[in-house]
Image (cartoon, rainbow, N blue to C red; front, side):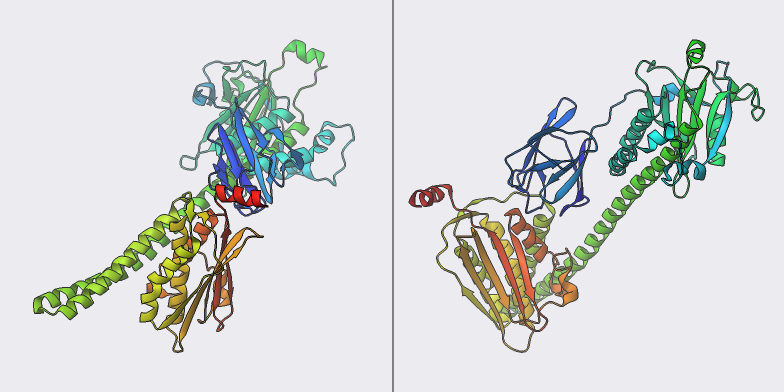
Length: 565
């Protein structure tokens, strides 16, 4: 699957799969690929599938679109391209070639039915010796093949960067094989991975050079594979009939491979697989080449280095997948534990209220019944708030935009919290700013965001011995096209060590009274409106929350203002 992997920016680590024929990338929630970067336009760039490739088109964005550091208007993406929008840098990984063939039918390990192999090992290289190819201090003849290969290290680095961010192992191996065929004059190749359970090699990727029969069977000597895996050494094989280390009756002399290279994929801790390439040279071709083989010791050293880098990439991919899975399980466990504790407290409250109701009905005591019902109703509201917070936080949603009066929405929150503030002896003050014109926003969402912040403020000052005060105000800034809602209290403030985790889910300073979802939900709702929440607090000096969102005027009013201007 073609993907965009964010390697720098607010969404670093995010991976977006290109599924639809046309994808839109931008800051707007309606974008199929939404990035949280204030320097990205609401609709920044369009990504369109053209046959098996993808093409991007800049949508007249404010800050432009860049590919590999160059500003582009329209560009055909190539695997490994770096796409930059705003401060966000993404790595594009193109689609892998799909193969429907069963590799077990065309790649076999062990003695074949036919005979006639004459391969022999002419040189073996250790892992340490092969890795010296990247030692830039070593001296090499200027015209040697290895010197020319080393001069392309910058290209190799960029390609390795693309490979290192490929999260699909099959796609990763396909790219490694493509690199090998770019650098080595091989006819056929195969990458095998070690099965962790059975400790046996299984072919994963196979490739043939253009002009070579694609259905030709690759038979790999198990004798050579055992030698490579057991000794962790790469081998270069040629005519093997005179090699005394091998039993003439073994599988190595039962095949017709003229030249081959087989290297281990040595990772940090173990061998994860092997890479095999071979080439066939007819007698006439060999004469034309002056008896010089295609594969040399330099090729073997390069393959050793590639095998090592491939193994590290495979290990990193497996490690990342395992880490993501572990984080998911940990998050699920944390969520279940937190919700279970919170629901248990709510159920205990309902049970206590139900007991009072039952006792009041039994004794015909209306006062006790009313007190029990009040407790039940309060806990029902807590259940409702918990469910709404969970749905809002966990579900990707688009704001239900409509024209509404922001001051009226905030005033409803104040009236809703008035009784709770009086019960805890908190002075709740509402100071609406100058008349705010009707704006386009989601009134239900903003109502919930403001309610969560005001509820936190009332709870923060309600436990203090001195009189508590919460002041809510609104402000319209037409020149900046924004509107602000401030919630300020005289509570204990927020300790410095808690500021970093203030908007983290399930982190609450209200113990059993809080779900830990109120502020994360408010932040999410403001983010859906392209707004933000600012916090100012000093221990012992109270706290000030500022909810800021764009002041979007209705279309007809915008046209009126434009005509008057």
